[in-house]
Image (cartoon, rainbow over all chains, first blue to last red; front, side):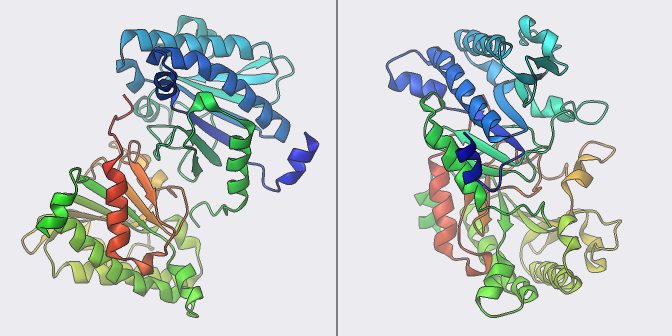
Length: 210
Length: 210
């Protein structure tokens, strides 16, 4: 793993991930759309391990949004369950978890209410932010600054599934982020895809608009 | 022009433009960096005409930002002048102009202070928003909602100059925008580049996160 670390001079401090394409992948595989989400959990842990081993300090994953909750009930149940399962699995690893989203809404999973303040699992280390029932307008309309103020500025956003847009992902933290889009669907995640994004990031310059 | 209109089923209602690469283009041409900005004015008018003729209702151009004002004084003077010249030229056309930015700062050009409320030129028609001394944090920290509330949601963002990021461009209006990046520098603008972005946009689906 040290070799991989040495390969890259610029390690993003904070990576944001938009793991899109679960439903399209499921349909391509002859599954029901809702069945895609469970296949998105393992890729998340592969990514977590790669980030941790590379020295990434903070990782934010787009779980589901307030917008997403308008989807059919069976899909909503499936992506909520996948988020709960992911957190249960993460609780067995080393991480500092923050679940961020509108926890006053019935769409917020009961099982995740204990994690809306940062919680250390195992030896801690990498900060993992998990957006759950997150809404960009909910975030901005908070009375004391933004609701997501404990999430820092993002250096690199990686989006799977080919769409070239942010879809409401942390508008404040994303203002200066470099955005790398992969055409592959999220359940098809490979280490090579991740390193392709990191390699691309080497050639971007951080100007913060200056 | 009707032919061009018919070619595209989906005309974006609102296009945002990040006209980047003026300085890199100037250096490539053996000019001083500051000299790139004046060469960015004509491309803006070519784009304005294409949008107007296609039936685009609103066009937002990234003039300069609060971040940009930290650049060397001669560059700052040059991009301020280019913005003033662009507005003077637009005042001879048909448009409804809104200049949006922090006009309480000395970096805001005196000549543009009359245009911080929407102003009709000629027969009006297409809304043109010009971001001048704009800051994303200035926009969000406004006391009555966002400062840029008279600018609507953006459908398509086209960025010239190869960078895949928003650089603080209207974070609220950009949450659902499809982002098309061209590697060409802004002073090299051609009609073909514009239609390439519009053609790409035809195959995006508007889900608004749903």
